[in-house]
Length: 336
Image 1 (cartoon, helix red, strand yellow):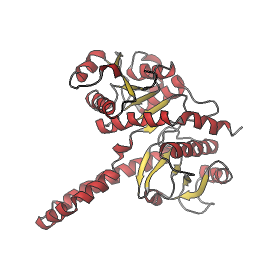
Image 2 (cartoon, rainbow, N blue to C red):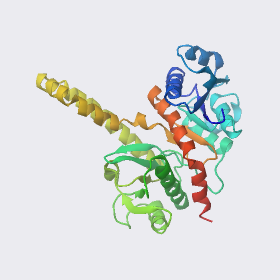
Image 3 (spheres, rainbow, N blue to C red):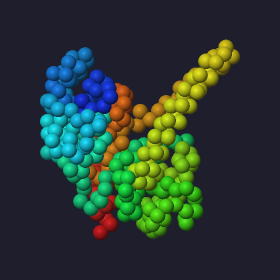
Image 4 (tube, rainbow, N blue to C red):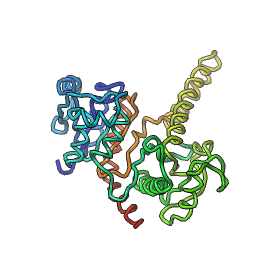
């Protein structure tokens, strides 16, 4: 058991819980022999779902939690009052060292609060950002922050750039990753007060490969490996990305079914089209890790299906194998 990466999974969180969550957990277990899964939720409900699958029972443990934190609940109050919830119990498993990582499709607010309050930040980390991988023309880029810190300060963004660089280099194998800050133009003098104050700090930071401003239209081209911004901007970028991808997929499908000639053409391009669509399917990249914590927290979409849950859990294995938390700690410690 000492060799396992132990992942606490919030079995009750998300629109499709518990069936898609449990299914994704079992699929991850079948794909990696490094995993041990702790499914946290209403015991009988979780066991009923597990009964649908064949799996190694030695690598699955059910942890009973009778309460559920709903999406609309005030996160701070929910964390304080619902001690027997799947989110709180799963996070305490990480805090107490019984698990290495936490994965949830549940309340983003409660996950963010719990990550900071229960698990805690690495010493020296001012804020912990959410950092999803997004598909680009050149592979993937890391968008940091996409939802945790709306009112960030320049020093926060500098730390985001450092943590994001560590993550891309060790998780994705990108050597000396290029870092850009989201802006409304390429010129250094453009942007709001936050961007203008942060730009020279990033420019003079020896620990990162800063390439300057990145406009939104350049993000899908993959001009930077790490895209730095505060959470309001990051969330808009992420949601626009997802919306455009969904819309384009619908339009392409409608076009290919519009007449006989289009259908024949669709059959000819189907293999290539499937590959392209797979490359731009964000579910395959897993969830958004909350970087800078003493334990790993991964937040998936509230509407996550089993494939995203599976990939979010597998993401934890790579994160732990590459010892990314310790490398982030070293990066932040080097500031002082």
